Each structure stands twice: as structure tokens, then as C-alpha cells.
Length: 463
Image 1: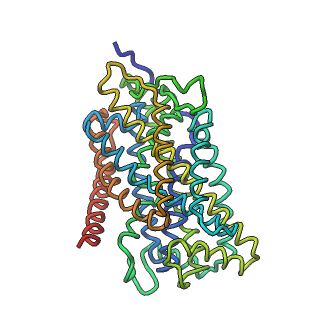
Image 2: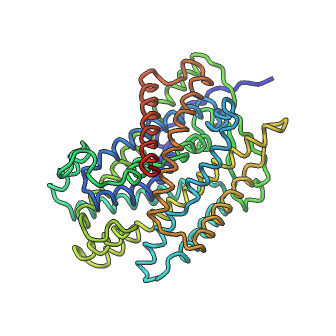
Image 3: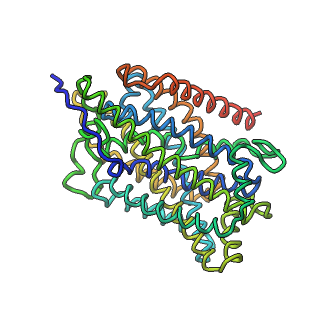
């Protein structure tokens, strides 16, 4: 007999903050630091509307992902597998291909190599991958490590870049940014002539986390203990001998659908919506805006910007010329750390996605619903590290190319998972816990947008 639990009482928003920092930090090294500033450096700030629309889309997508975990106390992958059992293969393959391409860590290595005068940055990139593996492996619980690191980097890095941008920009530059958020560029509206559709779609998809990474929000809030996630277990560190062999239950707990529990759900929903708005949407949009503006006021129109991530290196040089040389190096150091942290977060999130889906497959052939998830998780961590090292050894390490290729794949992944989550929430959740009608319309519109835009990009590339 299944004993029902009570829906936990809501906690304060201060204690609630955490998962949104992680999901925000996952986009720092792809959309925020690289792709949107790259577009601003080459085409101006008239493309800023794409960042605004992209992160708004992801805000609504993420909340629907959180909704499922909040009510069910299990990841959304478990729910999707109940309706679409074969989806587990899609999530494993699309995640490994989309994020196994090590463009972000290659970018971090190239920035650090420039600071320290290292000629070939691929060896530094290999070292960084190994360091990431050890960071994830030695934590008491992986989630605790990730939350602490991301909070420190965002709360230090973003204010530093804001103050730098404030010093280097003028009132006119900020006016141009505001016009760009409304789609008004210098001589164009919305999209400039010559912009690569694949690059724009890549930046749009990475306005936040992107791809299947958004789905890990359900895992993170489960581990944080939101709602019914309070009853779930956490992934232990690889070298935490007391818990690495511990079997973890993937399926959540049920609760009695009564007035009190529904009232608690509504309170939870209100505060997680606010938390995600403040941390993910506000800080995320602010971060992208100031990084685009900084790119614009320093290197817009400069020769060589279109080649790889040269525009970032150029930014450091121009900042050094306009202030003092050390500040330019500090900027590049902060960017390098942000990129490194993003790769760390991506490695954690993707390994969670793949391990959870493989575990679901294993459990479908077993009588019980518990599995040693930590060991599967770390197998995927080190498999991705090995894959990245192999690519580097074969001299496949140009950062921007790898990032854009991965982002286009992940735009398609977002199209798929937006539809799957929509169906799952509307089939498995009790009626009054499902999204409101206006939220359904927004999600359907987002689903169609990603499908249409992805089709255009593929048509453009193939034909």
C-alpha cells in the first residue's frame, strides 16, 4: 500500500534561492559571455531583443519543468518516461552530442592562454577538463558544491563587469541598448543584413541554459527539497564512501489532494515563480545586456571580431588601453573563470540528465525502483571528459564553432522537450495543479517558435 505524505510547508525565499543560480550560470559561458557579445561586436545592439525574448521563453519553460517536480517529488524525466518510454534514448543521445562538444572549456582555455602567453591552449583545455572531473568527484554532495561555486562566481563576476561597463559607456550607449531591446538597430530592425541564422539561433537558444539543460531544473529543485522533493535523496560525491553505494529512489511520493495541501502548493508556486524571476530572469537579462553593451563600447566594428572568440581578447586589450593594462587582464581572468564554471555546471547537469535516463531504463526491467545513481552519474562525467580530450587530441578545438554547433543541436532539443513537458504536465498532474490556460498558450507558442526557427536554419544549411 502506498502511504501518502503531506505536502511540505513552504520555506522562506532566502532559503529557497539556489537552483536558479545554477541554471543561470549554465548560460554564462555560452550565450551571455560568448554568443550575444559576439553578435553585438559584429552587428551592434539592435539584436538585443533576441536575448530578452530568449530568456523570457526560458523563464516560462523552466517554471513548467519545476511544476512537475514540485508536485511529484521526482524529476520530469521520470514523468516523461511514463508516457514516452523511448524518450530516454533521445535525452541521452541529444544531451551527449549537444553538450559533449567542449567549446565552452576550449574558450576558457583560450582566454587563460592569452593572459599567460601560452601558445597552444588545447593542452590547457585538457587540464581544465580533468580539474572539473575532480571537483565534481570530491564533493560531499554534488549539488552543494555546485550551488556554492555558482553563487560566488555570479555575485562577484556580474557586479565587476557592471561597474566596468558603467565606467566605459555613456548615456547614448545605454539608449542604443534600450532601443536594441525593442528591436531597433542602427540601420535595421530586428535582424541585420548578413547575420548568420545559425549563430542567431544558437545565441537565442543559449539565452539562459538551453537545450536539455533546462530539464535539470527539476532535478536541482528536487535535491534542494522544493515541495514534494523534500522526500527525495541526493547524489553523493564519488569519493564519499559512506554513500556512493547507496541506492536512490527515483520515483516521488504521493500526497493527499486536499484543501491544505493545495494551499501549500499555491504558496510554493508563488515563491518559486518569484525566485526564478528575480534570479534567473532579472540577473540573467541584466548580465546579457551589460556584456553586450561592454562588447559594443569596446570592440564594435573592429577588424577580426568575426574570427572565433577574438572579440573577447580584443575587449581585454581595449579595456586595458582605456583604463590600465592590469584591468584588461582582470577582465579576461573573470571571463575565463565564468567560462570554466559554466563548463563545470554543464558537465554536472548533462551527467545528471543521462544518468537519470539510463537509470529509468534499468529500473523498467527491475522489480524495485531504487538504483545506485551516483556511480552511473560519475561514469557519464568521466565519459564526457574522455570525449572532450579525444576531440582536443585530434585538434578539434575551435571554441566558437563547437559552441554554435552544439547550440543549434540544443535548439532542436528545446523544441522537443518543451512539447514533451507540456504533454506530461497536462496528463499526469491533477487538473488544478496543471498550468493555467494562458500559460498553455505561451508554451505552445514557444514550442512552435523553436520548431519553425530550427527548420529554417536546417533548410538554410542543407539547401
